[in-house]
Image 1 (cartoon, rainbow, N blue to C red):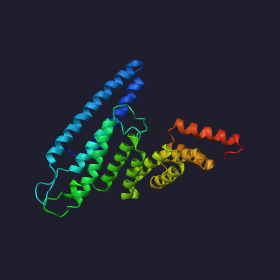
Image 2: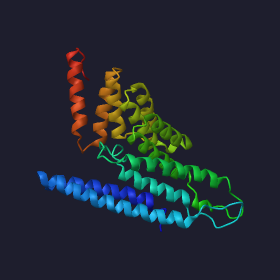
Image 3: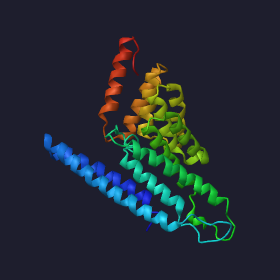
Image 4: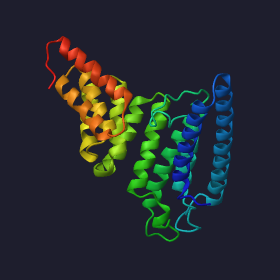
Length: 278
């Protein structure tokens, strides 16, 4: 089994599903769309369940790891738990929020619970195995999660907690992951900002979005979210206007209807207040 490829498999698999659903919406109509979407989703869930079963087999083959310095090394167990967590996360729709969807197809509570357990186990086991470094029978460094991989696990854990309605635990996971390497924590910081924005903590969201923008200057999504956060917090509306415009500039020649609408609405609001837009 190629365990290292697992996270990338689920990522591209989810992109494939998103493309499939979009194509169905574009080229089908009426009740047929719902039926085809249900059929496609059932097939996707079957594939993910099959993948999870294969990962269960990997876990069983891996044993419980070295004991008292003896026995075979674990079969990349942190990676197995990580992959199992990702499979459960997708089955529980926990990845929809990060991809801009609403999630909530129903029936995902059990899967999300499993996802959080698997991801937490991946991190805990990785820590325990790291502590055995140098002992006979200890895990090879290649069997352990490096910093980048740990950040990915924390990001998935945050998404699982968020989808399960545990906002505080989600924020803790995003923050802990980002703290491992703040220079590479863009996605974690941006997700933390979105979580704070969802809860109405606009000051907190602004701070995180500003952090994310430093790591990824010119990102249209962060620029737009900064504009929205400034507008919603009734802060510097001139800054909000500037961020919306910067987001649209970063997107050109592409267009974005929602950002354009936000910009127009804010311009009308400011003009009604006697503010002359530059």
